Amino acid sequence: MTEPNRRAVVTGLALTSLLAGSAAGQEGRPKPFAFADVERRAETLAKVPYAAKAPSLPAPIAKLDYDAWRDIRFKPEKAFLGAEGSPFRLQLFHLGFLYDRPVTVNLVRGGVATPIAYQASLFDMGRTKVDKPLPVDLGFAGIRIHAFLNSPSLLDELIVFLGASYYRFLGRDELYGLSARGLAVNVEGQGGPEEFPVFREFWVTMPEANADALVVDALLDSPGLAGAFRFTVHPGDETSVAVQATLHPRTELTTLGLAPLTSMFFIGENDRRHSDDYRPELHDSDGLQIAAGSGEWLWRPLDNPKGRRISHFADTDPKGFGLLQRDRSFESYQDLEASYQRRPGYFVEPDGAWGEGAVTLMELPTDTETNDNVVACWRPRQPYPAGEAVRLSYRVRSVGGDVLHPGARVVNTFGAAALASGTAKADEAKGALSRRFLVDFAGGDLAYYRADPARVEIVASASDARVTATSLVANPHTGGLRAAIDVTVSAPGQTTDLRAFLRAGGRALSETWVYPWTAA
Image 1 (cartoon, helix red, strand yellow):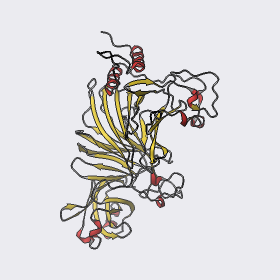
Image 2: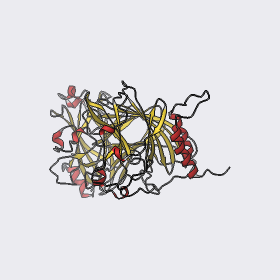
Image 3: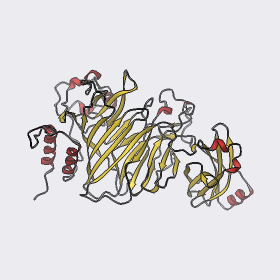
């Protein structure tokens, strides 16, 4: 049998989309659409090569710049899903600017999937003038869903799928910041550029009038694989998205990133060398939280490094990880427009055992707050072989400043010159460098120990470096304790990974603070 022709397969997939749900079953009744249909589509798609180039868009859509594209707005009165009394509304994004890869959007009613035809009348085209009708199969750039999130009488944006496999969503009283992705491939750039999987098609199922969740299915495509995704969105104080995925690798996947999160960190309390901006901090997330399979909780403050930095946190069957915005104080940001204190954190909780691997954190240098320069994902240790289906599921929660674990947590990280003791001076004479790190821990049982910090022990360590001094004092402003940790490396340019947590009577009182330092 010959290798299937890509055009024939893709044409067949499109036809399947048009007919999905209308095919008669064995007893003559319509066969209802199901997630298994998307899984079969992904399996078929994986058997043909990936089409790297998006089809050409017709004029004048092909020439839209950012402002012109942003000026095209979906008309709210044309929103889908509301006719039957559903608490959700579906709107569409127009193609143009960077979003030049058409996406097919289907509505599923009563088990029947029907593609939404493109109509210019769905949009206020703004300054863009269209001289002749655009084709009904033009497609869309993406989708967004509105719901009664913050008020029972006002629709607010809940979740958006736009660009490659990116999506982002909000909990109550939150503003957009970081994004999630379906998958990341070769995010570390090993032997080639990063691969960005794309969602080719969506199926949005019409919810019941009293539904408390919305189901969105998606077909993912990428040079290395095709996949079927189901997103079940539950709006609320902490909106959650349950993700079910079936992946079909075209090639062996050695650098796959599961449940990737993308965010921005420009300026923080631990690093202000990049700007003299009047705003004290500028970031969508301030740290990486990990709930290890062993039960240990880790907190890694984010940084804007001088060069690309990749950190791996090896683990087995992790309980969760996420990029969080813990600092919820306006005084930390002083930005009346961006309101960084209202940015959500996303926390990923695997469903089932994910085996051996590592939470991978990549930080890129940036000189502006407009660049997403942070990526976190789970990297399986074992590659996924070509031709073997991979199934996984997890939940992504939108969290605010709430504590995710019962122990004390890190609330501040500061760096300063170490005090020039006799030992430090002797080390400096030999070319060594020292630095002091101040770490504020608060919450848990620390209020109990504030009156007598001497009963608490700092457990600190450093790779390829020496911890030369530690101290602990009460911090009445945080209601916890402040740890001071002096670290010495043997020479400039040396990098060390620091770890510290608080312990009393053999019991851990806090999460583990982890932090990289390169001596300069």
